[in-house]
Length: 105
Image (cartoon, rainbow, N blue to C red):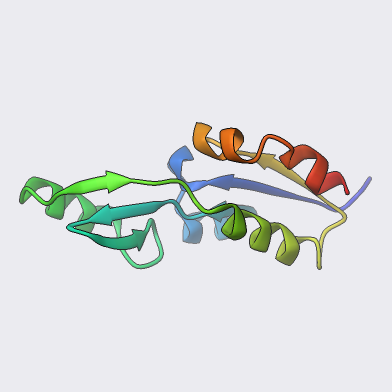
């Protein structure tokens, strides 16, 4: 059996820290609040997000850049033979339709 990393994005409801505890590598999704970009579970907590939302902040979401996805793959492939990537964000699939090919080499 090969050494396989499991990777998803934080739209699945698992934040990066929780993912580490579960053995799942979680790509944090960008959230733009009042013009400033934050990454879920990295520099903004869910509690802080909901406080800002309740206070009426201007909030939009984004998808991770292809470079962020590729950087995580590159890092994981230093340790693992392959990656099982389960993107919860449809935008990742739209912008990186050949992601399966990239991971397999």
